[in-house]
Structures are given as C-alpha cells and as structure tokens.
Amino acid sequence: MSNTIIDTNFNFPNQKSVYKGKVREVYSINDEQLVMIATDRLSAFDVVMPKGIPYKGQILNQIATKMMKETEDLVPNWLVATPDPNVAIGHLCEPFKVEMVIRGYMSGHAAREYKAGKRMLCGVPMAEGMKENDKFPEPIITPATKAEQGNHDEDISREEILKRGIVSESDYLILEYYTRKLFQRGTEIATKRGLILVDTKYEFGKTKEGKIVLIDEIHTPDSSRYFYADGYQERQDRGEAQKQLSKEFVRQWLISNGFQGLEGQTVPFMSDDYIETVSDRYIELYENITGETFIKADVTNIQSRIEANVLDYFRRV
Image (cartoon, rainbow, N blue to C red; front, side, top):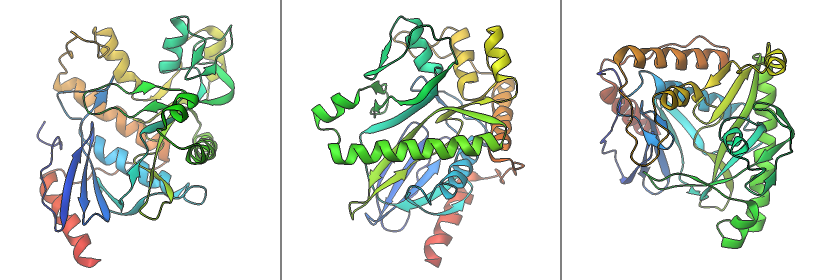
C-alpha cells in the first residue's frame, strides 16, 4: 500500500549508524542522540508481515510519546523531542539485553504455556486452578532475552539473568522497581479509560552518564494487552473470550490461518481489505487508550515529510 512507510534509507547530518529492528529504524547521530522512526511494519510471533499497516507507526509513536510524558515523574526516559508523527528523538543509550515483561493477568503467552501444562514461567510459579484471563494475585515479572532480527525472544528467569551476567544485580533491582512502578501507573491510566492493562513489556537502557532510563515504546497496543473493563468479570464467569485492545487480534487471525511463526509455516495472504480493517483497529486502539480523537497525518509522501521535519529539528537545535 503506497500510503505506508515500510523501509527508510535516510542520511542525516552527523549520522554514524543505522539499526533496523522489527518495526523501528534507529539512526545514531554524532554518537549522542538517536532518531527512532516508527514504520508501518507489523510484527507477530517475531515475524515481520509482508505488508504495512496504514498509520500504525504514527499511532505507536504518539501513544508512546504520550505515555512517556505521563510517567516521567516516576521513571526517567530517553525522549527529547517528537518532530514528526512517526519520529522520536532521544538520548543515545546502551540497551539492556532483556525485556522486562510484567503480567497482571494470565493471558497470551502465559496462558498458552499454562495450557501446555507448565506451572512455572521465567522462574515464577503460577497457581493451579487458574482460567485463561484470570487475574494473578500480584503482577508477575517474566523477562525475555532480546533476540537479534529473525530470531525469537526467549523467556528467562531472574536467576538466569544474574547467573549469566546479562544484567548486574544492582541494575536488575532498579529494572524490577521501575517495571512495577510503570505498570502501576499504566494500570491507573487504563482504569480512567475504562480499560484493564493486562500485560506489557518495558525496555531500558543506560545513558553515557550511567543513568538507567526507559527507552523504546510504552503502553502501546504492540507492547501491551488491554481488556475492556466493562463486562470483564461477567465474561470470565461465563468462560467467554475477553473483549480486548491489543495486537492479539492479528495473532489470532494468523493462528486461525495456520501460522504461529514456526519453522516451515508460511505467512497467510493479507488482502488490502484485511489490511484496512487492521488499520481501523489500530485507530480504535489509539482513541481508546489515549481518550483522544486520532488525527491522520499527511501520507502523500511520508519519506519526504519525515526527512524535512527531522532536518528542520536539527537546524533549530
């Protein structure tokens, strides 16, 4: 679809390197700042889908920006400016090689593991007798290692992280503390919107000064799962699926079409009509999560727009 941004190849002033992740492209400027571009690529089961989703990058970038501003009193973050709907500029950080996943409810990956008979996830026990989407007595932290492109993130326990020296114990205690504080604030924000923050992941990095800060996205539908609070308990009592706001609807569509990112499986064909429905769902997610009407950016020529806005930002600073 011509009104999406799938790949970028910019050459900004003082640019040192480019890193291309599953859905974001990160340009290092002068080894001081990063220009992070949220593309319209869609990733599920750690596989990038062949077609982009209109406005998805804008939606994720704007939700993340808003949520960082709403949590910066609790946890410092990397963000400096957002000169374009798809762009965030922030401090260069050395990322920790783990994602801090926190779960308030037994859903998604946790539920799939539970159904497979496992009662331990990342070294954290899960009680017998739980049903899918039940609330945990207390939120549990289930970290994952950060995979290189094309590989799957892997569950890992706190003990294994420390044993392998992936993160020092003193730093890991801060990551856990920040994760719980952010999840608590995210839960409060969601409650005001009539939503339940089910689970999410946070990524952290260290600045050149050695300060631990929140990086990447936060509380977006790609990094988080939300349920509608209204009717949650009734649906649980009846054993019905929860009405949810997250990327899970894409995962479920892929599963129903025989794809879970396993070796030998092929990504099912996504028609333009289906792509349009996914874009509409992302807009619905934005409006429900933020409580604001989504304003579509001009997508006549996204590449030129982004380049002009970033160059103008650097000229002004």
